[in-house]
Every structure is written in C-alpha cells, then in structure tokens.
Image (cartoon, rainbow, N blue to C red):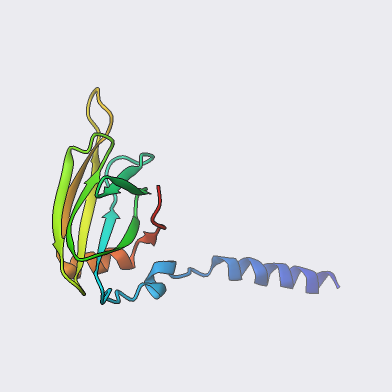
Length: 142
C-alpha cells in the first residue's frame, strides 16, 4: 500500500513540473474590431521590477501594467490619446480607422530622486504580436 501512495505522490509531483504555455499564447487571436480598432499597450522587462505603469486612454485610467503585462483596448474610430505614468509626460496620439490594430510599448525608467518615469513607444505589428504572445493579458480598468 505504501508503494502505491508513494508512486501516486511522485506522479503528482512530476505532473506539476510540466511547463505550461502562457495563457495569452493560446487565447489571443488578434481579431480586428470591424466597427473600430484595437490598441495593444505592452510593458516589457524594464529596470523597474516592482513598479507599475499606469496607462490612460483619452484621460481615463485603463490599466496598471507590471512587467510582461499587456492590455487590449477596443476603441471607436478617430483620434485617441494614450499616456502612461503618473505625470502624463509621455503621450502618443493615434488616429484609428475601422479594423486597424496598433501596438505601443511602455518603459519605466528610474530617476535619481524622482518617481519612475514612463515612456510610450510605437511598435511595428510583427514585434507587437510577438511580444503579446509571450506576455500576460490584464483586463482594462483602473
């Protein structure tokens, strides 16, 4: 009986060690929004380990991104303003047309005496898709 219990324990332990794909790798389909567009905002492996990058769309908070997080925002056609960081010093304007998908990267940098500063940079579609496939999707919301 002891051998069976030990064998089951070893099997359960080994099953827990099997690497699993990140959830976004199988779930994200990059389907276009036919009535509007999609904006992906990503955060990579910048030097700020514990900080979050607060992101706003048109002045409204939409997400707080940790390292390797991303958010997808389905938006109406037209011009939109994306900002990150507490001071909103980094801003990107984007004019969305129906079916368009755009990607932006956030980067937090640490100052000597100030809070971390956030920078937004556009990404090309192949790079954006690749980064999303290795990231973790977070829900839009403050």
